[in-house]
Length: 363
Image 1 (spheres, helix red, strand yellow):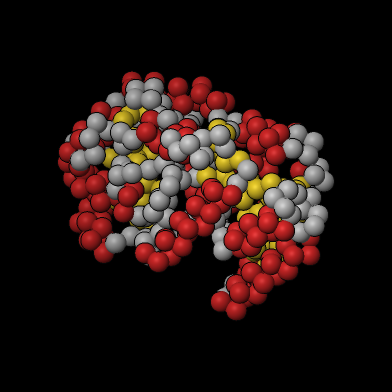
Image 2 (cartoon, rainbow, N blue to C red):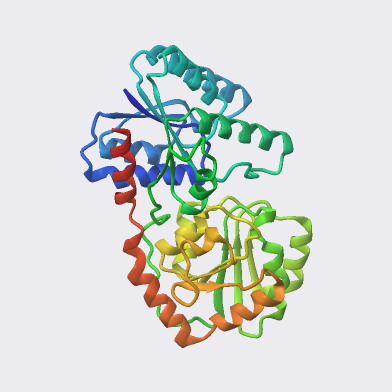
């Protein structure tokens, strides 16, 4: 029995799982894998059944509270216990406390159980603001890394960090990354809007540099309009947004797939002034929608974005330099060039090829 385990509540890891399943559609893997999640995701359920994977979940996501969450973990533990003698390969997509038990199962199997882990972030990456919770997530991440038979990476930037450690270098396999999309929308408009539509998308965390973008906006000479979509805004950023008035639209809520699809379908550019990054879901979504990126001069951005080809790289992560780069972007000729290159290069990022590499290695 080969199991794909996902214990998260949503977010980028869930999108990666959906894309991996969709990408596996032509690989004839039916009945070889069981998908097990802590919570029920109806769209994931339909995708799993569509590609022929059995789908099992612990509880219905609609009834989440602390009691049901503990119950869900207990059900997951029972499932693993009942099936441990038949399980010989587990693919872990997101770190979770139950991973400790999975590694205990490996001991019961006399190490015949193969554990595969997809690593999204480099060692010690700060996942959440909570100090204790982040320490715990990093602990689980490290446990997965040490005990896994193979480590799979979407990003060469992240893989390089692990290859430097001789304990991990022989385990590392690059499988590539496909583009993300939230729906069927397309963005093929080759002319700039007036005002130029800028998008900042995703959970708002300090390292993503929204404050730099808000400081840059008053310095931009071109006619632009910024849309911010995501939860986690700070009070100081709220004050800056109020001062900017109608130059900013702000949606302080969890963004549905339909609304995300709409935002990417109308954006002229996605702005990513990250202070640090390993890989970025909003960036890969930009590729999927053929939207140029204005991004920081970081390896995790430059792995996918080439300056003057499918976006612009900010030379230094300051408000002045970001404003200068946005003004540079607001040229019809440059925009058309970037847009055409975005459209022509989309096939380089195929989830079908990513899935093929991943499942062939596990098989």
